[in-house]
Length: 100
Ligand code: FES
Image (cartoon, rainbow, N blue to C red; front, side, top):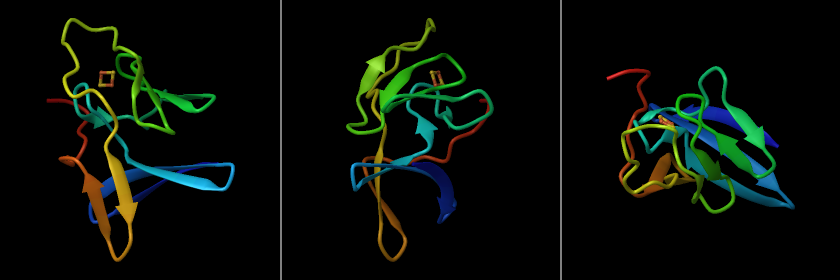
């Protein structure tokens, strides 16, 4: 099961598999764009960013396939989120933007 939600102004994506729940900031670390924007794709346990096609594991957050771009992707992994009273992140969260 895959769903998106917004908590505290941060878009999140929730992936559930085999009774486990994985929550991530819905932002692509490549250019900080919204990874669940129109054109994103799920591929098994992975998500494909619609902008430059970087592929990330929704289980581990790791980069599976790099972006098709001249701009390298630094610290290229999804940012894990935890939902309790609000939301907190394992890493530096950002609010994804379409451009700029
Ligand atoms: S913004 Fe996601 S691959 Fe470039």
